[in-house]
Image 1 (tube, helix red, strand yellow):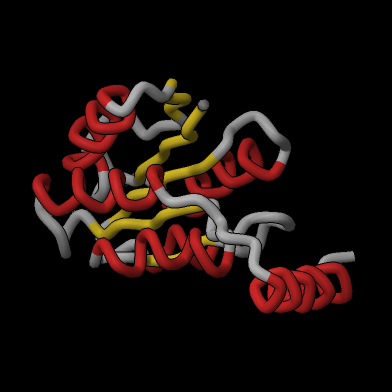
Image 2: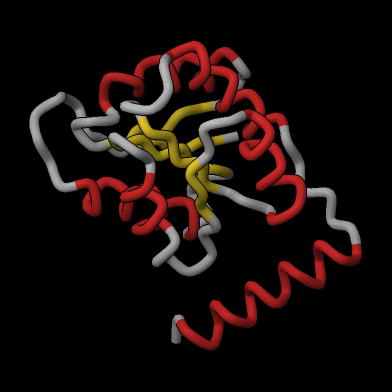
Length: 150
């Protein structure tokens, strides 16, 4: 499976760790930048990876910035993307299991490399359960998205 990855300058320090973990799990990485710690604008990098995800060019996305928040805000502006900041493994898996989250946002100034690896594992190993109540709730999310993203 292809995993889209992007970061801004603040998330760049954690990007190699994340890429290595994704590859170690047998997935392919599509890197959407940035390629250094030189200051950039996070919306540019979040949007391109989220658009790739929404366009079917990636199965999931992992977005890195200082807090994870900026990337999540931008990614959720793209129709079809369900992104969340997760700094614990429970949330990284639970978001997929119940809400079919498809983009994980991590703050490189919040978590270190070891926890980032565990977050990636939890996120990529989780599968949407698709129980009736979850499908009903996901449909409500999709209905809201359709109404507001015309």
